[in-house]
Image 1 (cartoon, rainbow, N blue to C red):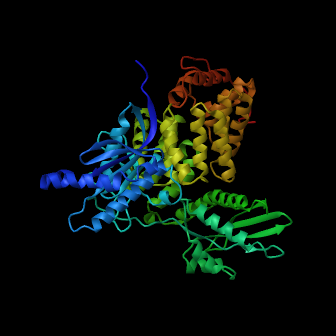
Image 2: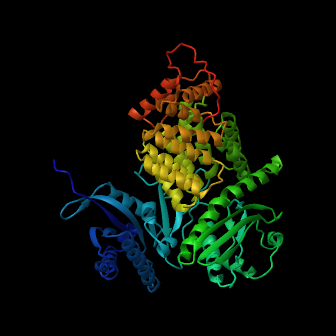
Image 3: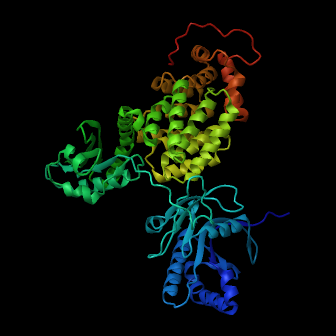
Length: 618
């Protein structure tokens, strides 16, 4: 049989709300109404957008467009025209639901088929009356105003679709957006979108920060506009950092050219952190210096600088904003963790408990991972719907499995995957949540497809989030793209050079070199990771197999000795059972390196080698 012709296209699905009732009430009138809508509002502008109708039903139709932007602009214009038409009439309004999806369709000469057609129609049932629903794949193709016009609707559960669908909604000006928040335990479905109760809003406990106008210290004082551009770019970039809230630029600029006491800002604006800095020019060189200050105490938490040229000021502004965003996150996180630690136990909220769990989570030691799980369970007892707590607990359980700390790996894997799905259903547009979900799928699955979906979302939400780039490196490595994985890890290191889990990026680079067959390089970077986190015993596995395959027998056997000191019962089979993201020849080679390093097989009864080798990696 010949392979069917397929094409990726954009489909807009339209449907009249309550059409059956219209037909029952006035059959001929309803038919005339539909013909008039098609004649005056649907067909006239289709050719302008390169679109054509591929299916019509009594109450709606499917329209094919050449691009996402064409589909969105046409559908917005159509719904605005429908709203104006209804406003000018003295009879009951006729409202249309619309959905736009990317569709992989089967082509014939006169029709379009495929599961994507059914998906478009299911998506349309979830759209608000008079509005538009789009999927995440459509949303990420949009830029500027069309993208900003859509409001995140979270994850929808559509009939006959076996997975939650991330959606965004749009409504014409003057029309009310539907209530999108489910009650506890309720999932968003087309049936519940119109009548779900709003959950009690939890207070936003993220700290408030302000970027003050930068001082122009150039000899001629001629870089003021450049300095203002730095602040504007930095404010925009930091607004995407989920860990903080940022004072609007206009409010911050009221302090321009005024002496400012950062302690007064804590009182006047309620800010906890202040970013201040200066611009200097020497010849063709521009230097931007920035520092992060804790407003309450005036303590300096971080400072850095970036040089560029007067010939490319926009690039320098971007680079400074990225530098500050990458450095600010770990500095603020550490300060917030210290604040949470100082709180009385009976005053800790979900946010505080998650913060307290963080250092244990990234310690990569058995006892710390257990402590992190305990704190995250307390956080979920406080708020069972916290996406951050759900996703981080899933990630902790994944670590517990792959690092052989679990006493029941099957149970923990099932729970970790369920928690990741539950975190996804919360619909939190938080890069940490998306990264943790992606990390869970990456660690526990050989196929990295789902992991990459969530990690890509994290980076789309905040391109300066180093943790997301680190996990992207692992997902690329396990997808057969180790060269691209190294680039992702290097980006993570550049974005956050003082990050507390930077060691994990070096371990990832080691993994990529291992997969490339560059075993000496892999051993070098595994050792570098262990220098950054000496108690991270699991990384000695990577060091042992890499060093053994590189012919560095002494170092390999020392790494195995360290592994067996931690777990005397460790065997090749035990490690193989814990690895879910490698398979086939790659896994066999990994295990063979461990055999060469001296790790016993399951049936090997000989005692481990007693070699007097320092445990510290080279």
